[in-house]
Length: 321
Image (cartoon, rainbow, N blue to C red):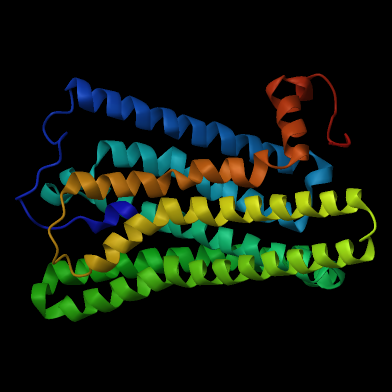
């Protein structure tokens, strides 16, 4: 999505525009290619793990699976296309592949964000309403969540594409339409999901603290219990801080820029815009660590896959620790 913010101006030139063979640009492309490989391999591990191991066939992991698919295609499609067709290139060369790249970019980035939002809803019921969790968050409900996330992502991408095509035809006469499409796109893609996630994780944190205090009150005579409670609170605080912190660090700078630059009226160096774009896209790599590597059963699954044990005998029913 981040690469969709290109502006029609010629006063700011990207450092690599026309200099793709310079050492600086070659190193940059190598670095971005390595990130793409990490995203692809990491998310493939998640997909294979959830599909292969029966223990991981849960509604929560189906959400993680769909998120991994979105992040996988970010590595497979968005990264290579964005390396080849940079913001600067698409400012001066309005090729079909630039529009294809932008549409794929918007669809997958939005899908990734919406999946994070759905996972936060799943975690809310698991922590705050555990007795209702199994009857509320079923495989059917998760399927609906996944379908809605992908459909909304496609609709947002189509909306941006139609607005861009209309603006190319009628210019300033359609400026208000561009503003409306940009505002609605930002709300649907970031601000609304972010608000939901923030409220949910704050609620989870408060409930976790309340539960911890209840345990402490019931076992006030035991120092060991108090130590355990303290450790639990620290772990909950750390996990929630990482989830929201990484999400906001990756995406907030770009969307803040997008708000400032609605209508392409603010001149910001394209190199800065592309930096914000790549920072946002790296969230597809960090999702891997947040939602997979923090769980021991995923770590066990990864070891079995990476060592090639799944090719020697059936591990699908193995108890993962």
